[in-house]
Image 1: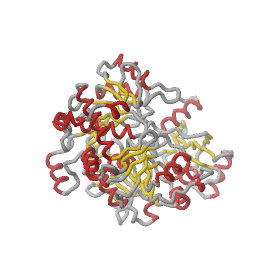
Image 2: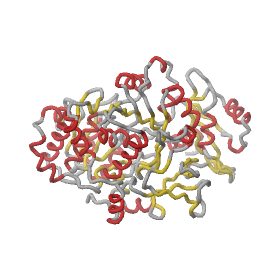
Image 3: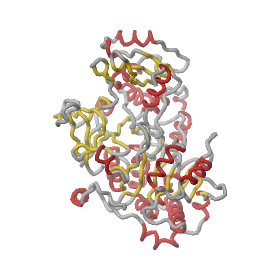
Amino acid sequence: MGTVARYSPKAIAEYVQKGYWTEQLTVDFWEQNAIARPSQEAIVDSQFRLTWSESVAMVHRLASMLLQLGLKKDSALICQLFNSAAMTLFRLACEKAGVLAVIVSSKFQETELGAVLSATQAAGAVFPPAYGNYDFHRVYEKLQKSHPHLKHLFVADQDAPPGAHALYKIFLTLPDGSLKAEGLNRQTFTPFEFTEITTTSGSTGTPKCAEWTACARLCTARQYIRRFELTAEDVIAAVSPAISGSAETLIHRTPAQVGAKTVMLEHFTPEETLSIIERERVTAIGAVPTHLVRLLSYPHLKKHNISSLRFILVSGGLLPYHLGLEAEEKLGCKILQGYGGMDVGAVASGSLSDPREARLNSVGKILDGNRVILLDPQSGQTIEGGKPGIVTVDGPHCVGGYFRNPEATREAQTGGRFNMGDLGILDGEGFLYLTGRVKDIIIRGGQTIYPKEIEELLVQHRKVLEVALVRMSDAEMGERACAFVVPKAGETFTFEEMTSFFKERQIAHFKIPERLEVVSELPLVPGGNKVNKRELEDELKSRLGTG
């Protein structure tokens, strides 16, 4: 069942022969470090400060427990945790035990979780203790009634309600997992099987489940190691949720391959992020553009010594050039971009050696081994370099497709390549420049508005902190543009100020937003890595009475 149908024997042989794929799992690198550097710190969060040997002992204990519970190979367990050592160790234990970890956003609630449970038939779930007013355990207890296969509940805490397992007690008090080593080694995944299931954010509807293979994700991590010049001396911190995209690769797949320490930030705030960078001497973090905006607007930024920081890897949204430039100047590190898709895999990334203009304007160069072809949006024909086209990709960094959904996998591909749904330009030096989303464009009376262009311009207004441009239906023009704006602290922002700003810059009149909505914050998709424009469009319809 774990075999990925999309990977033909020929493709596997090619990727292995060229050195892109190796016969190792993520947990293998942790076990190697437990032998090579047992007493060095491996992972840190608010609850744990663990060495490599301590971490692996916990992984083996939990993996043994999974076998004792009767979980067979390719059984599935939902992993719904905040950034934490527990999340990393749980995923590694599942990999060791041959159990599919189903990675879901901590923001998923009953509706999304029910859909994922129906798709995966998961036998259990791990989740945090109650957070704020949200009781994870109560939600899963309710889901058990409609999903009888959901038998095993784990709470990431020292204690657990009746009928659930306390994850921390398993980590710390169970007998050494080596007692079950023979069973673990017999049941663990083999190379080129998919080892995890990830879930799309659900911003366009019901979450889809995609197959993740360790070989593809580790392949991308090795590219990061070279491009970002990572060593065992680095300290890599999770700021974005380490469950998707470039952040997942940087945090979960990369550190163990070089012996670097990982620091997990459970919940982002500028103060906590800067404090952790300073305290742990962090050298690299993964973030989304919104994180940069909030760090740069933090009034006490200069009070923190973050000189250890070498670079920030930004993904999950289009990075305005001026934002990247300001971040480099005020944070004192290089800004790099990563590009890919949660249900596709990695496509491109920047390098520390790239010129600044390329690093901030492009998403970098195509990852070694990937084949990217740009297609004309109208004709579907291949476009040569220098012209915008739909980005399609295939290669060793791409994941397996959708879990038990061959139809969705076929729909996501064009000519055997994944369709990213983005418009991009490849220049003569191999840098990929994204110009917008195929479905994100606004057609006003037959004229095309690219939201990225307008957002990058408007966010330069001295009063504007964040902006998102969305479409609104119109009987006359078909669609018009509406700008959702978050003003800077203490500022007000009016429609007249917005239109005057655009007119002063001599922007074509059809591109100027025809409605302004001032909000306190922009909603993010459940994965927390990009603005949820669907939610904004729905909110706009409600306000206009057109929903």
